[in-house]
Image (cartoon, rainbow, N blue to C red):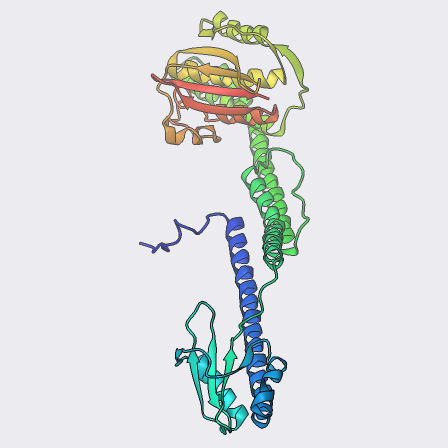
Length: 439
């Protein structure tokens, strides 16, 4: 069995659009976070270098000045010698605890380097909420001196900076979404066109606008569509030509058979010739349905139209009835619609002995005409295949049982020509329903 990633059903999206968006967004967000982290580290290191540099450069001078001044004059210079991160205090300072941190050792080392190891120094940490260190030393005259150090980290962030960060992230999401949309939209249109591909219907070619790779794929798709339509047209033309050419020799054979003496062999020959002739006629009808008859649309009264079809069958003793009340009108091709319904009724009569016709309007106000029977129906896995040319559920060559396999295929071709849709489904309780929807 193929291994499935553990994240496939959790966070990994199924659509290409979502995957590209997620990859770009995470990648750009990580890159942005890395840049921010590097900037923050550089700012921290700069602030630390400034603080230690100030200690190293200024403390030595300040201690040397205080060491040379008389004790009574030292207090006047304390404020001038103090800086933002440290100040001088005359006296032993505050009680603290020994500091063993790396920062304390680093500050102690800088101060010792600054005073040239002339004065012994000790560093203590002052307990409290603020990070605070005190360096204790003794001047040459024995006076204690304390350097109160308040190490400063990075400068405080401006109040408007979080808003800028939010705006940047929104722009990042917007740009990522726009880039993904520009890249995926042509693919979506190509997929929709492939899903709706019907070479039998005339339609505009898919637009070749977009990136060069997508445009190349669209050009290949349009060319493929034209080739498929050409192949189908050639197939139908061949069928029409063969069927047409067969009519002449069949007619000659029929005349010769009729002139022969009556015998059982003559009856079999006439019967076979009749079956061949019907097969040829169905082939011509299929070819005509594929190419279209050029019939114009006309508005028909549904009640009169359906009644005329049912009466034609009833006059020949066939059990064809109309179910429910038929009303309204439809704009369609009458002869094509009559051929479609006749094929449905013929199938129903062949397999069930009776047919019912109903006319309804669906939620979209489209006309739905259904021919129903109570015959054996069609297996669910063969409903779609039943509308393919020359497909027969009954595999015998007997026209009375198996037929030519073109009736439903002709109906499907004609339904496409009149702009409708065809559906076959098995009825509850047994039987088949053939439904044509007029849009």
